[in-house]
Image 1: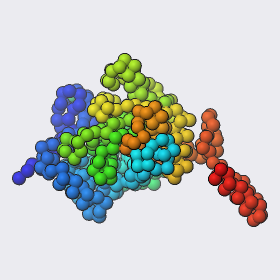
Image 2 (image 1 turned 30 degrees about the horizontal axis):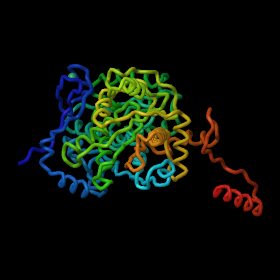
Image 3 (image 1 turned 90 degrees about the horizontal axis):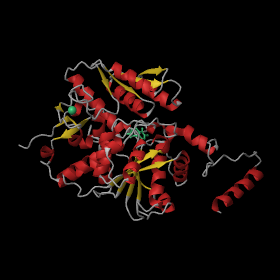
Image 4 (image 1 turned 90 degrees about the vertical axis):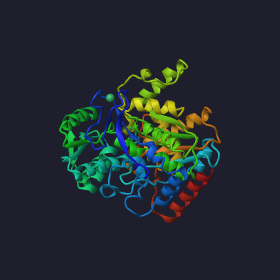
Length: 456
Ligand SMILES: *Cc1c(COP(=O)(O)O)cnc(C)c1O
Ligand SMILES: [Zn+2]
């Protein structure tokens, strides 16, 4: 009998302490370091690479619960200590890997080079669903094992709270969401309200909400769902396996991802590293972490290291106060997953690029003109792509995957402001409605003129 898959929390700060995945802990209890989920790789080697590929392909997008989920189709690699019956899945993942041929050609890439992984066409409209299904399933498992967990809580301004509220509602577990009053959009407030979460609108900013949620979750019966919770990384990392699977088990040359708290850049690297360790791929892609210029502490650290001709190291980093950016989900000046992200970028020959407000808005709008509908964070990644191609860091023939992290429909205010030309910069790709009367001949004549302009 081969050993069955198992995994545990392990401290990444050097003390290497191990803890069970059903322990209610978020940081190393010994040295306060970040935790990471580590899998028993020998147990996972009991299947050959060909057998894993065949298993994942057989489960892909099928009906059997929970294996039809993009995340739970890789269950053995993700969270082997949840009983299938305790999984709380909304069949997240399995998102489209879109061939961005027209936009790719416009920015100087070969026809089959550019792919956009549409992670935002998911249950709550962002890729946070991937991690949240793992966290809430783990909590459901703890509850069924008799652990006294009464609720799950997070501080968030948007996508995390929407995902937590949806998965909590699917499980019937109470959810507490702490939001900064007046600093979130209507869509971001409505999602957790609709799902029946306890929505607390606090008279403070995001950091103030974080302080409160940390005080709240000192009570071990209230489980903390914030980004330092490394169970979420296990769900997010399935993006990497899914990309490789969708490319018929080939490795892309580049993966670009917008970065704020940096959990996701770490997760994507972890996914590729484990794929290589288990023999499903034989090389790693390069990773580009893409930041908004107003929230760019990792970019600054990368520049500091590059300026001295060194690889990025943790000591290069200094926290900043992040400024207001349209890419609100990555407005973070002191990312919680920094140590993991530095390791990830070093392992994957990573680069860090940044995009200004105008660059991210124009890139999103330009790509929209080829049929996409991009959120501002995806705009950051696309703007960085354009810059890296222009500087020949990315070559025209290389195969590039851009992670689209949220659905544009969650950010209609951003898009409306752009097309109404209401920014402090000119909107290069603005498209406004044409005001017309209602007399058929006149309207028809105006439409003919407009078509001629579009074809010019
Ligand atoms: C959370 C989030 C990110 C950034 O992920 P991090 O792990 O914080 O770097 C990017 N885009 C969207 C839409 C997000 O919700
Ligand atoms: Zn430790």
